[in-house]
Amino acid sequence: TLSRFASDTDVVDFEWAIQVDAWCTMGSMFVMLVLAISFLVPIVIPINTFAIIGLAYTLQIINIANRELKRIANAAVSPSVTSVGEAEAGQSVLRAHEGSDEFYVKKQRKNMDAALAAFFSSASVGQAAYANATAWCSLMALATSLVIVLAGDHLVPKRLAPIALTYGLVLPYFASMFSELHLQLCLHSTSLGRLFEYLPEFGVVPSEAARHTPADADVSSDWPPKGAFEFKQVSLRYR
Image (cartoon, rainbow, N blue to C red; front, side, top):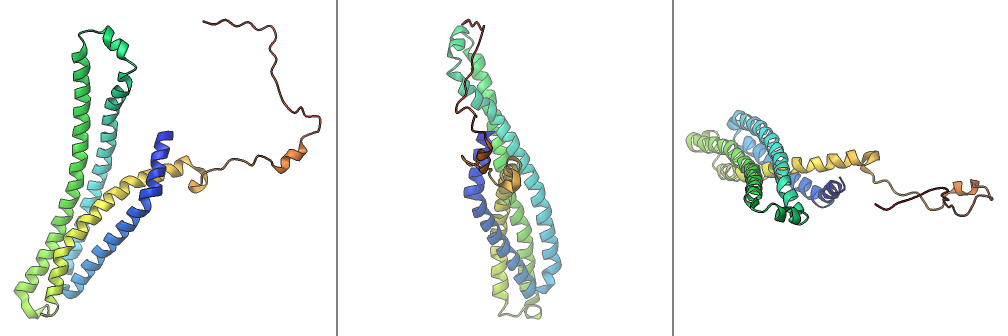
């Protein structure tokens, strides 16, 4: 518990504020680009709305899968870490079981395979967030490009067409970065939630009481300055 508490405190103190700032920055840039494209090319507003809803829905599914896979990965690495930690303490047992080294090697290999598979799956989900954002934003960029190329000056003036095309091309980048930051922020929000569970009064760390308090004056003057224990008729034996 103390190790988890220290890890959660480190995440909240050093990473939480940075990630929130980056999340807000990328999210605001993405929203502003979508609004700008919708203003310059109003005919693509229905497509942009559909793409935003699809992006939000699929990103939420990826986020749930990512958090579950992170939990599985952390649980899968525990047997390997435990085995390494107990290897030194169990040297005498290993020597006593001569000829059984292959058993322990196979067991450790199995644990490592499970841990690596879980970490690979977790990393793959993170890449899926990039692909998901790129796919949905490419739909918006493609729709914008087709309208500008096919409709010409009828829908988008020539002086505004380059701006709309530029915004459409950079849109997948900001969406991908926002998706990655969203996944990381959701993972680290677990640390923040645990801190609120550990600490009372909305996460305020309780401080120790003062060495001297006004209540000290209520102690009577005949109170002994020090205490002691006296054992009578007690027998002890070392085993």
